[in-house]
Image (cartoon, rainbow, N blue to C red; front, side, top):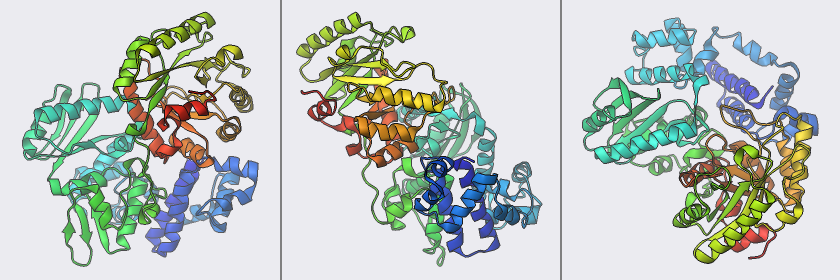
Amino acid sequence: MKNSEIAEVFENIAGLLELKGEIPFKIRAYQKAARTIEHHPVELSKLVEESGTEALREIPGIGEAISKKILELLDTGKLKYYEELKSEFPEGIIRLMDVPGIGPKTAMRASKELGINTVEELEKAILDGRLASLPRMGEKTAENILRHIRTMKTKDQRIPLGQVLPVVDDIIAELRQRTDIRSIEPAGSLRRFRETIGDIDLMGTSDDPEGTIRAFTQLPQVVDVLVMGPKKASVVLRDGLQVDLRIVEDDAYGALIQYFTGSKQHNVVLREWARRRGLSLSEYGITNLSTGEVERFATEEEFYKRLGLQLIPPEIREGGVEVELAEKGAIPRFVEVKDIRGDLHVHTKESDGQNSLEEMAVAARDRGYEYIAITEHSPGLGIARGLSEERLRSQIAKIEELNRKLKSIRILVGTEVDIRADGSLDYPDELLGELDVVVAAVHSSMNQERAKITARVIKAMSNPHVDILAHPSCRLIGEREPVDIDMEAVFKAALETHTAMEINGQPQRLDLKDIHIQRAKDLGVPLVVSTDAHSIAQLNLMRLGVATARRGWCEARHILNTRPLRELLEFCGRNG
């Protein structure tokens, strides 16, 4: 079983125990175990195989009882305790609990009072008004649940982040130009910079909500208006994307954007945190359960402060340990785009880029960068017009000349050298030794078995001239699965060979992914955030790379290209 499947079992156990009225400590133990397992960077099956069953006990939050249940799941694919627990409840209750907004108690009420046992029956009960009629439910809550159900139906059609973000950026820019909208931001998985997006929610404030909503529905991108009210609308765009916009007063914005940003797991943890302090959370604010008073919040910082917590960055609101650390004020300042001093993976039209060497260098200078590495493809990648040895030497001369011309930025001579099927590199060592930065990458023979491709990559990293391993898993989101590589072995080799791992900002890559970034960081592996830019416009992809690094809990000190040029060159074994 995969970690995600084991985590789902424990999350379901926690929900069923809550229905039974078990002690909160027991429920929280299963919830914590579920979150820990889901975010663990190494598959537990592999961990047990390589390090033995005792390795499970070394994972925080995994005690003896949970460890035994994990082993039973790994051995048999089932858990007797879970099956017996499920038999105590109506069939389908687990599926209802999977719907965001439907907690264990609501699922049980829907089943007992309305005879609902499937998501389809739940949707029908919302449409005919029966669910909203339940005590403490109401039409707005039922409407939110319906939206989540419809998102679940299209779960397999989740859209890559890189496809959604430019569309949302355009909408926000148009609304700022056409209306008086102020604090507008996306919420949900888009604000957390997940690699794929389900629904698209925008939240904002305005002195003229109705005018702003009307302008939103009349944007040129809109082809259909599904819902339109005085403060909320839902539209369909030309490319089929659905976008919802909500407008609230300034003093309610913090609670609203917080409520719709976190993952289901984060919100569960936060609600439990609030409940233990006599509080209840909603999109409208924080309610004191003893008095019924509702406090409103203009900012998320104020919202979290009321709960006794440090502001939690959106990228990590995933239900891990973020709330525990926020209580201690122990969440560090994560890396930001402004910390980046240069881009270490850039192409020009000499290979498969769109702009000239000088154009890319000037654009990087105008972004405030201290340096930029030009890393054309090597000759083995013919489809990308990879540079022969002669062409690369010619480019070295051009860069030296341009460096004399452009005084305010240093252009580094580099390459994205292909790692051949046997682990050798596509340029001779003599030529690689003349370069400032050597980025190595796999572009072919990706179907090699795990041991072979792992050994291949490690062999390439062992070359003393290789500084960075580019897009280590070779995945293309929604198009190509990652290669079957032992990432743990690669990270350990990176420490031994003094090789940095790349966080590639290309939206179809975002590679390394978040859990691998966090593991590499924890091991002390150096990381770089690069754009793999093939045009001036793609230099802006640094935003996606940095967001992915933040999802991996990276501070500026973990990212090599936040360092001054001298320190970067020292890492690469060159002098300035």
